[in-house]
View 1 (cartoon, rainbow, N blue to C red):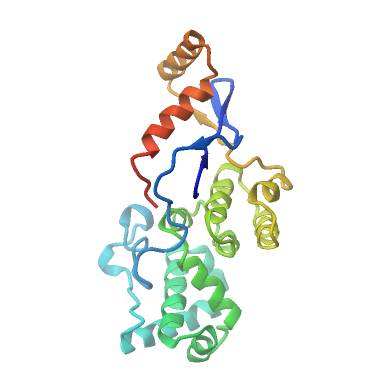
View 2 (cartoon, helix red, strand yellow; view 1 turned 60 degrees about the horizontal axis):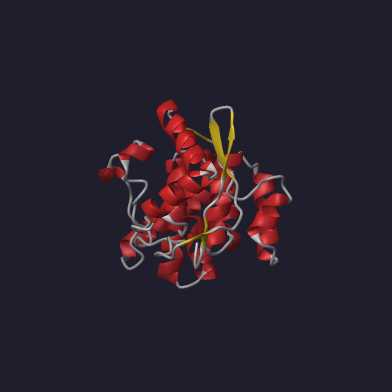
Length: 249
């Protein structure tokens, strides 16, 4: 998010709080990354055992500047393109996406990468998966954990800037189908605001349901009553203070 950031008000339903965006501004701070920050081909997520269960030393790294590593990337892309069923294996998928991105970087173009890989690896295939590899870590982590389907991630990656973060979080919070993600991504790329594109799918941007511990919920309601404000104002202020210290991808 850039510039003034919307900090949503929260509505209460049966012990749960639901924030709904109204465009309330947060103070400015560093923009969260919307693209990959780590080196192309580096197994940042694949090498995190808490996410994939894979040991760091077992995670293949693709170096686009190393001829031998680039040859491995080409073979990996060829295998990845020929095994569509492998997309359900998140480690296999992330490795294939990394190989696609490294091959493009090493060869200099999608076309050259496709020619180098051969087989079923088309320009469109390599472009789609390279984009997934270039998603920020905050999104890639949810893909690796199976919380965002790889097929949905391909459409999220089509969207640029803060909209891709907003779309990714909407997938998590509203269980959007791949069809819905594809539709929203297409609308955004045609110039529609992401909030409008999500609304067309029945989703309110920024709407999130969380459960508060009973003592926190009780105190929130008590203070809101004594200060003559809505609970969302107290929550928004608390989140502003927490987020103003900086953001991580």
